[in-house]
Amino acid sequence: KQEVTQIPAALSVPEGENLVLNCSFTDSAIYNLQWFRQDPGKGLTSLLLIQSSQREQTSGRLNASLDKSSGRSTLYIAASQPGDSATYLCAVPSGGSYIPTFGRGTSLIVHP
Amino acid sequence: DTGVSQNPRHKITKRGQNVTFRCDPISEHNRLYWYRQTLGQGPEFLTYFQNEAQLEKSRLLSDRFSAERPKGSFSTLEIQRTEQGDSAMYLCASRVGDNYEQYFGPGTRLTVT
Image (tube, rainbow over the protein chains, first blue to last red):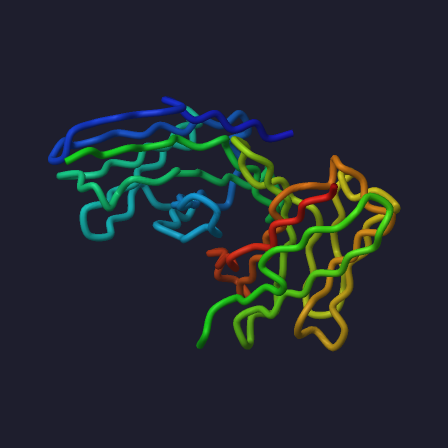
């Protein structure tokens, strides 16, 4: 059974800082890993999907890396802005499955 | 492409009543997922459809829960004899074929009083 842990659980930073959010998983036999953003009371917005054959993906100020062998992924946010404030979730399928297990998320506040 | 839509957005019901939620996936997305999310937790998988076939169900999905996807288009999730513990956000997501990226709807927030 896949277990997904996200560290830190919460983060409060001043605007402009570069951030690293961590996601670890127990079963490394995965097809992919997906990072999402969730605003309070809303659905999830897909940020980045990394296939198991890839090491990283980039979109604008976001960069996600994947190290399957160590069961880790990081989401790097460059030059954070108040609009980045949200909860960030990673989702990892169980080995041999397309059904993702989600972490509890990292709640991010970027203050001006 | 209008994205995944869910209705209603909010539902307040009394314990013991039945409720039904609807999800309209992105057109041509043949895979559809239902999740439940409570405060401070990540979404938990409930069930998965490929076209009209329900391929997987979580052990979380008790006998009071039923989901359908007639004709492989929209899907419904019904909860019978609701309990206070059913209060949560119910999320729907869809994807297409071999593209594993999931797209989520805005969710239906259920409150059972």
